[in-house]
Length: 207
Ligand SMILES: O=C(O)CCC(=O)C(=O)O
Image (tube, rainbow, N blue to C red; front, side, top):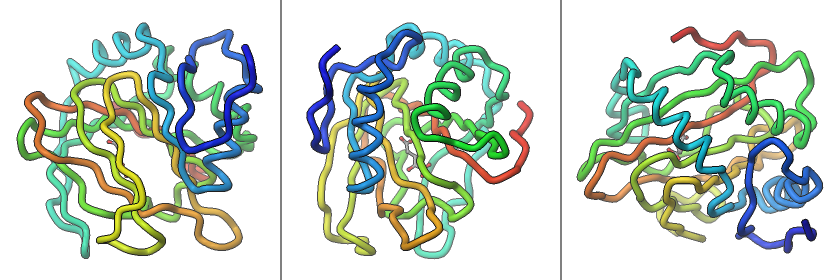
């Protein structure tokens, strides 16, 4: 596989075993320098199917409707680390993003109800380190990045579809690279995503 172009959008990559990790490293560089990267079609269809099967028996829990300035209409389901497809993704991201063994992954399915699911502009919590990966599994919606610390000035928007991945910079020891971002806009089917984050030392949730 040839090396990836350096830009915000990186096409035609698969996050399956056998991926050229140098290619993903290029995506990682973009995400960690620019603060985000959009990887359309990055997730192999077999992973999308495996996750949707798993998510079909999820016990969804609504997230609080308002948290400070952030409002949302979305439900969550924490995923066990041992789920094989999730493990594949975790292994890949750990190696590419140089995640220390002492950090723990946290995987969460999110479900956005059709027509009114969304999360308003927000940054991920500071406990989430280095890189946050947002995997789209079902439904389409807008995913927007805002100019630094703005909740109104959009820098980039993508229509994310199943198989797409958005990488966001997580908290770092210097500066604050975390991008303000928002998800949503009415769709005609429920949207399901999987977020993969890393914490220092915390244990994964049980299903
Ligand atoms: O659903 C997604 O793709 C992203 C979710 C998100 O923005 C978040 O969990 O902070």
